[in-house]
Each structure stands twice: as structure tokens, then as C-alpha cells.
Length: 157
Image (spheres, one colour):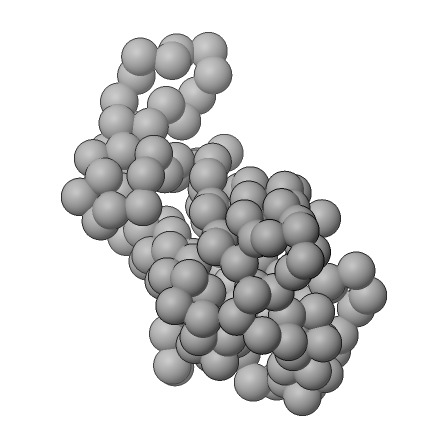
């Protein structure tokens, strides 16, 4: 399994951590170099986090592939960009409901030349009135397209 770990949200931290992440549990001190593909996908995940924290829901959603088969699971499954956009707007109707997002333990795994899997944990900090804090995990499947890496499946739990 090929993975890249993210220690913090800065690009310098991403590169340093990606270059030193332990890819094999049996040899935790073995150095590992992340692939270009993995770094590109992790950069997108971090860009999504930044968009979210600016209150830019459209910027966050822009990373999804505009295709009828693209899916997002936010409690219920949404298929296609119109349904995905609506699901995000219903679940996060305003900046307060979005809160502040913090990703951690982000890993990217290549699934061939044109697909990549990104997983990690999230924490959303917001007021009790806006829904309170939330923690969970996320899984995103990316496809390499003419427009670059795009999400074709996303699930948060």
C-alpha cells in the first residue's frame, strides 16, 4: 500500500511529512517518498479545507467532477452535481453552520494511473446554536481527468 501522511496544513509541512512518512508499519523508521499523484491529491484535499474555512462552499464543491455518476454521502446519498450542491446547502446553509474545518491523518493511496483514494479525519468546530462540534472520517475517490484530479465519490461519517 502506498500512502502519504499529512502532519499539518502548510505546504512546507506537507512536503516534509510526505517525504518522511512511514509507508510500512513493519519498518516505522524507513523513509518514504510520496508520488507526484499522491501529493496532487493531498493538495486538493487541503485546498478544500481552505475553501471551507473561508466560507466558500462553492469552492469546496468545485473539486467534484461534474458528472451524473459523481456521488457524495452526507448522511444520505446525493448523485450528480445538482443533488450534491443541494445536499451541501441543506446541511450547511450558512457560514455559522459550516464552522471551522480541520483535517488530520490525511492519506492518499494510488489506485492505478487514473484513480486515487484519499482518507482522513475531520473536526468541525462551531457554536452549539449552529450544530455544535463534529468529528468523523472522510473518504474521497479521485479520477484524473482532462481538467485535473476531480472527486467522483465522497463520504463523511
